[in-house]
Every structure is written in C-alpha cells, then in structure tokens.
Amino acid sequence: MNKITLILGTLLVFSCSNPSNLDKIQDINSTFENTPVEIKGIVTGVFQDKAALSGFFIQDDALFASSGIFVNSTKEVHVGDEIFINATVVEVRNETRLDSVTSIELLSANHSFTTHTLNFPFTREEIERLEGCLVAIPNALQISDSYSFEKYGQLMVSSSPLVQATELFDAQNQSNQIKAHNDKQFSTTLVLDDLSNVKYPSNEDLYCAINKVVVGATIKGVKGYVCQRNGVYSVRLLDDIEVVAPALNSDVAVAGQLKLLSLNVHNLFNGNGDETGFPTERGAKTYKDYLKQITKLNSAISIVNPDIISLMELENDGEDSLSAISQLCQFLNRNSKRGSYQVAMTRNSPGSDVIKTGIIYDASVLQSKQSSYHADSIFSRNPIFQEFTFQDSLSFVVAVNHFKSKGSRGAKGLNKDQKDGQGAYNYKRIKQAEVLLQLTDSLYTNKNVLIVGDFNAYSQEDPIQILNSQNFSKLQTNQFSYVYKGMQGDLDHAFVSTKFRDQVKGIRVLDINASYPNWTDYRFENSDESWLRSSDHNPLLIGLY
Image 1 (spheres, rainbow, N blue to C red):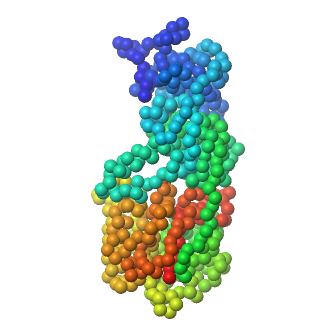
Image 2: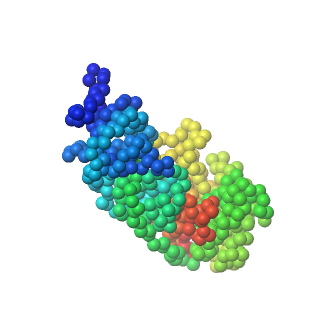
C-alpha cells in the first residue's frame, strides 16, 4: 500500500502554496496510524447524514497513480470540490481512513474525476490500489451468498460459482491445488454493500429487489467505492444494480417405481407436543413459528410425494404421539397427497444428542420388516437402519445418518481443525464412517443397502472417501446441497451397496433451500409457506427399482 515520507523522524506538512510537496493519498499506509497528514484531492462522493457513512471519499487523479481514501468528517464539501485537508490517519477494521479533520480548504469546484475499471479476476495488489476509489465493474457477476443482505445490505458476488475446495480436491494429497483454488476464488469475489452502516435497512433503501436475491442471480451495473474490512473487499454501491434471478427448477421427476427423499429438517422441535413448551432448545421459538416450519416442510414433501422420507435434525423426544416425528407424520397424513405415512418405530435409543435421525414411509406401498438404531460410542446421533419389503419380494435396507458437524467447540487433539480444509472433528467423522461400514457389513451382509444422510463432509474429504470404497459406491449428483459463506458444496450424500447399484434408477438434488436467503425461512415474519427455504440443506431425491 502507501507510505508517508518522513525526514529525521518529522512528518513533512506543506502549505497549499507548495502543493507539489503535499502527502499523496497513494502513500498513506496503515503503518502511520495516528499520524497527521496534509493532502489534496477531489471529492468523489459525499455521504454525511447520520444514516449514511458520516463522511466522504476523495480521490487523487494523478495520471499513473490515482488513488482514493475515505474521510470521516461532516464538514461541508461537495462532489467535484478540489480540497486541501489536514487530518489524521486511522485504521478501522484494517481499513486506512482519515479522521480528526482539523481543516479543509476549498481550492476549486466542479472538477471531473476518474471512474476506474475493476476487471475480474483481479490480484490483491490491483484491488488494494483501488481502495477508496470510485470503480465500475464491466463483468457480469452473480450472487454467491445473501446471508447478510437483510441485516446489513450486503451481498457476496463473484464472476463464477464459488465451490468448497474439498468438494473438488483431496485434502491429504492436493494441498497445492487447494491453495491455488482458494487464491483464484479470492480474485473473483467481492461484497456489495449499501452506503449505510445501519442495521436492517428498509426495502426502499436497498439497491435491488429482495425477491430477486437468490444464489446464482446475475448482476450488472456495479458502480461504487472500493472499501476493505478485515481483509474482505467490498464495493459501496453508488446506484441500484440490475439483478436477474434464475428460474426456479420445480421438476421433481426421478426414474424408478419408489421415491426416497433424504431431508435435513433444520431442527424440527415441537415443544411439548400440545402447543406449549416454546421456545425450544433448538428450532422454533413459538408455536406459530413451528406451524410455519412444519407447513413449509409439508409443502416440500407434498410436491415430491415420496414413498420414503429419511430425516435428519428431528427433536430427540421419542416416537409417541407427542413426539416431533410422530406429529410430522400426522401433519403429512392430514395435508399431503398421501394419508398412509407411518413412523419407522424402533423403540431403542437414537443417541444422546438433542437431535436424531428418523424415517417415515408409506405403509400402503412398503412393508416394514425391521427398524433399529445401532449404538456405538463414536455416535451421539445413532444411525437408524430400516429394512423394507416392496412388492412382496423385493427387500432392501435404508440407513440414515447425521455425522458430527465441523464446528470447533470442544474439539481436542486430533479433532481440532487441522487447517487442511476439512474443519474440526474430521477425525471423529472418519471413525464414524469406519464404524458405519463395520455395522453394515456385520449386520446386513448380502443385503441391498442404501446409506443416506448429512455427513458434514464434502465430496473429497476423508469420511466420504472411506464410505466410497469396499462394498459401497457414492451416487454422484454433480450438484450442491449447502452454501456456506458463499461456497457451494455437497454435505448430503448417498451410497449404495454393490449388489443394489443396478436398482438405483435416478438421483437428483432439489435446489429449493441452499440458494434461497436464510431470512426467508420460517423464523421470519414475512416469509411464506412455500417449499422454498423449508430447510438450510437441499434435499436429495433417489429413485429405486
């Protein structure tokens, strides 16, 4: 970045009668935090009201080294003013700014100034040089993440889809490729932001319509000021942008006579089962929220109309009539296209966690032969195995799993994040994969077995490689089930035993959740009851026979 010239430890500050010796914006660097400077520049944007940024941008339009900076001041200036300014260098979340303005002198007015072009991909040096400058981006961009849009007016955008590195590369053997992949994605990613620091801006103050904010939506017309916060670069938008949302793919067709829907239900807790007991440990905070949550899940399940529903993140509260899984089943029978769903009754422990796995199936189509959770100390959420008979003679087993998450809380030893891209508790997930295969091999030898679930591991990570070996093969979708910090990846997988492989007729991911904003789920007042954002994971649809 920039430097301020020092001679014998004394900062040179010149009067406006000798402007050639003034400090240059391009030389102002974080190493001179709290240092007073005197600079000349042209005002390129003024955003001084209380709801805005409380300051203005200035730019030095030198022919070969134009640069800009934000000035935190409410002293009166106008766009196009050329000014001398005395101020102090400060760092705000690692962004260099000017503050504590002692004087501003107007030299002349109505100057034009450069709008720089920011091309994708860019290097760190290129975007750093443009910090504080007004830029326009000619590239067509797309939305990669909308998590902070409703709260802060921020969108993560990129010139191509962002993908988790370990979705593509082996963490053990391809560390160089992972680094190159992450570097490349940095050079194609920015955050768009409004010109305000106010939380929860009104829809009228946002720069695009909220109903178009979907991962994959295309964006044009980006023009604004380059800013940086803790190493993340953003553009504070000067004008509204053009957004075209992708068309919803509502096709739920899949080959095969039987349809299995594998669905993470995003902490479905039903209180005490009698409209009381809210807020719950997880999930809905009120009974009203719970009704919207279960209604949205019903919308998704009804549209797919599956014969088998494998479930993750159910409240671990038994299987009686007041349990979360039983009341979901009852709700489906009252409101979906089928009235003959039943809970796979196990009557044994699903594990010590507050959430569990479960299975609901259509008893008019399938006969339940045996259902059981299989316990092992490596699992806090035991896998459930359900053996079915179809058309009297066709027999198969469905095993539903929910492996340990990547969060680092409580991680010790080998379970700590090894900084290889696989997150915390990878060692535990490896052991869970190994035990799952041991259980399957010992208890269901020569059976037709389908293993599904949320494995909290991307496609090239160790646990998935372990499961995709020996007697099982991974069913490939080439789609994503989850978006985390703008990066797409597949956490939800299916594996089929060798002898059952030919009976899998189709598989697809339904992109109805991960691409849609978190602030459109059941927890938010203005959300609807549609199947969109009925969970945070995309469901997996599999066709059998």
